[in-house]
Structures are given as C-alpha cells and as structure tokens.
Image 1 (tube, one colour):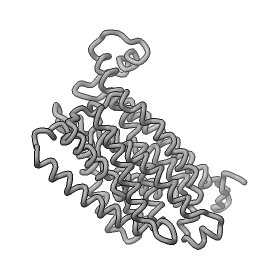
Image 2 (image 1 turned 180 degrees about the vertical axis):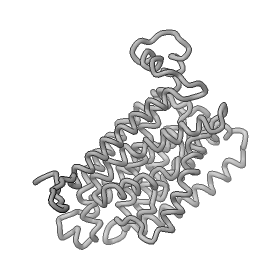
Image 3 (image 1 turned 90 degrees about the vertical axis):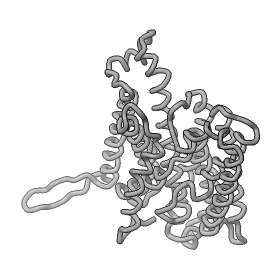
Image 4 (image 1 turned 30 degrees about the vertical axis):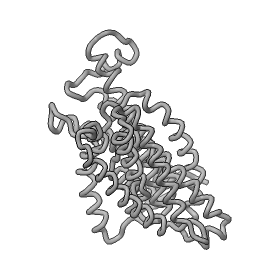
Amino acid sequence: MTALAVHHDGPGTVQVPGPRRRRMIGLVVTLAVLLALLVLSVMIGSTTIAPSVVWDALFHPSADIDQFAIRDFRLPRTVVGLAVGAALGVAGALIQALVRNPLADPGILGVHAGASFAVTVAIGVFGVRDIRGYVWFAFAGALLVTLMVLALGSTRQGQSPVVMVLAGVCVGAVLGGAGSALELTNPDAFDAMRSWVAGSLVGRPLELVWPILPCFALALILAVAVSGPLNAMALGDELAVAQGVRLARTRVLAIIALTLLAGGATAIAGPIGFVGLMVPHVARWIVGPDQRWIFAYSVLLAPSLLLASDILGRVVLHPSEVPVGIVTAFVGAPVLIALVRRTRASGL
C-alpha cells in the first residue's frame, strides 16, 4: 500500500501525495497554526508582551508584573480556550454524524438549554454567585437534559435521530422560557450570569478546568471508539446492521461522549455557538466523510477558531473586550448563511 499516487503528464512522471499523506500534511499544518495561536493568545491583550517575556514567565518565573499577567490571567484563558474549543469541535462532529445532518450543532439536543437553566436555578434559588459554584450546576443540567432527550427519543426500534432532535428542540424551548421567567423575578441577582451567558473565557481559573478534563478525555476515547460504526451508519441503518454495527449501542455511546464534551465546555465557558457547527463542516471539506479524520481535524481546528475569535475580541474594541461567544456568532452567522445557500452541502 503506497502513500503516493503516480500521475503521468507528457514525457515526465510526477509523484503527488496520496489522500492519506495529504491529510497528514494538512494535520501538521493545522497543528502549527494552533501552536502559533496559542503563543499569540498569551502575548496579546490590553498590552502586547514580547515572546521573551512569555518564555521567562513559563520557565524563569519572577515577580515581574507582565509575568504575573501571563501566569494568572492569559495562560489560564488560553488553556481554557484550547480545552473548550476541542470539546465543542468533536461534539459538533459527533452530533452531525449521529443525526446525519450537516447543519446540526451540540445545542440541538438541549445541552445549552439544560446548562443555562441549571445555572439560572443555582443563582436564583440557591444564591450561588461564583462561577466555581454554578459550573457544576451547568454540567449536571446538561447531562440531565441530554438523558431526558435520549429517553424521549427512544422508540421500539431504538433511538431515532429525528425524534431526538425534535425532543431536544422542544425541551430547549421549555427550559429557555422557564429560565427567562425565573430571571425576571430578580434581575439584580443575575448580573453575575451575564458574562457566562454571552460565552467567555475570561475569569476561568485552571482549578475550574482540571476536574472536567477527565470527562473530556473519556469522551474523546468514546468518540474514537464509535468513529468506525458512525462511518457505516452514514450509509444507512440497514447496511450498518449488515456490517455488524450495533445501532443502539453506538448511538448511546456517541450521545454520552457529546454530552460530556458539550456539557463540560458549556459549563466552563457558557453557551458558545457556531463552533460545533462550522468546524466539522470545514474538516469534512478537507478530508471527506471519514469520521476518524473529521474528529482529528476538529480537535485542532475548533480551538484554533475559538482562540482566534478570542484574540480578535481583545483588539477589536481595545481597550474594551468583546466576549468570544459574540465574536464566534458574528463570524459564524455569515458562514451558516453560506452553508444554507450552497447547492451541494457537504454530505454525511
């Protein structure tokens, strides 16, 4: 099995990379872009800090004020963007493969609505005002609502993707209305929630992220495990069953994975839209319909998009900042319109 395809053009013979090699090269380029954005995310803020200062802050710490800003603010913000972006990207790829709809995103199963309603209850009922407290309410709300949608989407033949989508939309609408009604009862109490609702990477300490990282790791393992069966299911349930795929098991594992990913990301940074929608589409344009490659590219492309949006949000209204969730919405809306208007959307 060769990695090169031979192309004959006139008297000469030219070797061009085969599909696998092109994908590997693209993956390396994407990784390089992500590494560059990680560095820029640490350097750029209210003031631009030189790379040498960033290096000293990481490996030769001192009491310098710039080093303090890097270690206590910019580095945690960058790590959060990396983790949340990767989680949203893979979650988006999972839900699009699961429901076989290239315009689906993680919020379609009610993940965002469940997390937002749980945070509203935490603030309005239990008086929790700090993100370290209500992040766990958000995670639990996302998990519970997705389990509810999974139960509502069950039929005699197993989990129906169409019914699950409808259940997610309905549950999300109900919880959105209930949360808005609760907020109106005490508007002052929900001032602390505004930054979270807009979707932001600011003020998320690393100790908030570390406990959720094992959930992300487990979800990524599950995503890799179901990538092959999801490829088979893209051809239709009948053909997938003929190839030995256990449909119910695959769907349950995929839903568990995307709930851990999207629920954890939403709990940390708030409901950030369009990342889980755009990135799998871009990955599919690059590598085709193979979910294994789509997941690999999404892990790198999604944090790149999120970090780039966060950097843009820091400089576009300097010295003020625009929350990253608003920036991704501005970037994602035109992309979504372009996707809808395409005569041939990328297939699944």
